[in-house]
Length: 298
Length: 287
Image (cartoon, rainbow over all chains, first blue to last red; front, side, top):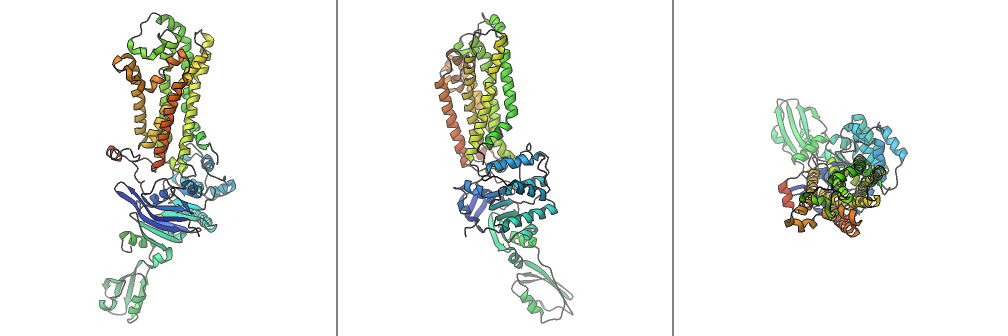
């Protein structure tokens, strides 16, 4: 099957600054793909390269088999885009903005679909964009990206500025688009929303790809903290010299460990002693993300 | 997909400027025509200083209708038209890029060349409409006073303002496409206009530089020449050919460079290092 998005060694350099360094990525149709990284990691640069708004220094990218550089017109005809910092014409109403963008797209626009989206997002299209709040601008941006129901959606932090209710509404819309076969490329620096919506996630750090994983396995590889209470004196430290296990704290009848990956080895070692309590918390994906940013899991 | 969305959008964006300039054109045409008989009587024996001879050109005397219209109307109103197109051209490209709205347009299936050409067509239509507003002004004026110069000849001189305005329109578009900020593009375009205008007028008075006057587009757009001899198709064609060259440069510059998400960051040092390469683009915050 033709990948929805394919990047091969995609790089972008601005003078001495390497904004993106040899990105290799493949996103399939029907997938909601999270693209994570802190500000300046290269997320927006990647999306702008895919749309041919900026040109790569090296490598190539394709959307649905169309080269993003040589066939950018075909690419943009099949792509909906929401920029990270959406700017609108302040003198145009929401309706007029939609008419302007619809006039530039092939195949016209399904008015009833647009009206349905506006209703779900509680978006008043009769007001001028200049009077819109950041959240309302973002809602209109989501509607504009979905005009013509393109098979690929490139969304740069789409829920930024939205209240939790509207965030859920947007996630629901994106799930529906993915269910009909659209690929959703979803950039964010908020792990919890990626966790809610995405099937796979790529982590970008300083322009380089740190990891591409299903959301679940990313968490499984995370560092977690384990606290164990014993009936008496805790066992000697030598009992827990195990791969991926590090003793952090030793207090009377308690030990605290940092475990990377599975806890199986630690559990087997503990089985030889009288354990009163065993406490561990599922690591949040933000903790996972932080470990990648620090480079510990790279 | 409508083929004229961006053309219509440009007309809409520039409608206030177009109406304002058209109003000034028509008003000045009425006023200048109305005051001409009194002016002629007062200036008949007046010796025009050599420096101002450039404004009269081939008409010979400022008291003649050709000399009067050339000096009082056609010497400065093209500058108004040119100012409007410089503002429009730099605003529609560099201005929209700095405002971030260019991203919204070019993320759609729109070729950069189409965007530039539709916007150029819109600004060209505005130039023609605003210039043409002077013709009814001449007609109204001539209904009240007798001026021995036909409206046909005045219309030809009006049409003669258009090629030189379009030349500066495409020069501004090129500057806006190639340079890293709207203010810089405006500065270059205005500098080119002022330099050429001064060269033409000073060249008329200073024999030492008279030969280089023909480097100025204003020399070839001389309205007195048209008012005396009629519309000069060859001169207009030359001006339009140069307009085409500048448009080609604008397309080439716009096509090959990165678009900035918002105002482009630049420094003179950086610009000099880049040389002819149209750039100066830094990644947007959060890129």
